[in-house]
Image 1: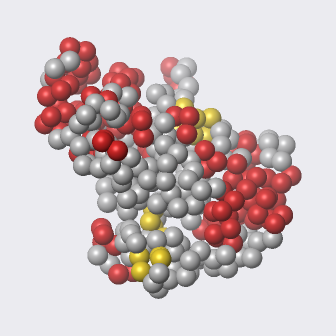
Image 2: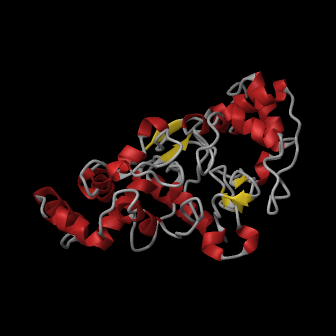
Length: 325
């Protein structure tokens, strides 16, 4: 039997015994993955959220994780490119953090395999928070609250490993579900407008979106070349190639989730597409031709009504956004 199914059944058994109900929006797996050595606990989540919001973890004290991952923008920042301390601009846009508990790799090029590794990278990055882990730990140890909280949660003094565990645990609670689309799938026939229903048919059919955007997270967690990075006969960003050194991966980027997509623009790894309408136009036109373009990205020739319907469906993927549960 599949391990996830077993875990879900065990969770249901626990619910029946203790009468508790997991805080999981409709449409998401009941089982939320976490490492054996870093289980989700309420106390750890609270500590992680506090760290996530603390500008102490940036070189000049001007930036926290929450400044780049804003809740009201579905944990993105609304900019085309990430902006770090001293106004330093990064090469890529800030990806959303929703439902990353189910992620299989992280960053646009997938160079990191676990959330525990991922959450400290922005602290270390020169173009983001620009702090060493040693400096971060020293700063946290200088605060009575953190000394107390780390001792309470981990039963030891502040250290880099537990900093990562606390942040990763909080990020695992950032989730989105219970959208009109989820309610429709679960039998609420009037949850989607007529236009959104037409868009769903296109999404599953002519537009071929489900080849990459499927499952509870609406992402295949794979890497694809749509031609976004191709300009003037060359790639402006090598994407996945920088990790694998496989020429076939040049220009490939991770499939983003479509949940909360109406709130996470501008779009693509470089923020080069401003609106959902432009995203739909881009795919309708077959992306941008280049030597590595994914064969599933092809000319669709959607008409105006079809584009409007697809847009209506994509907007129906915004639902209940929660964190800390």
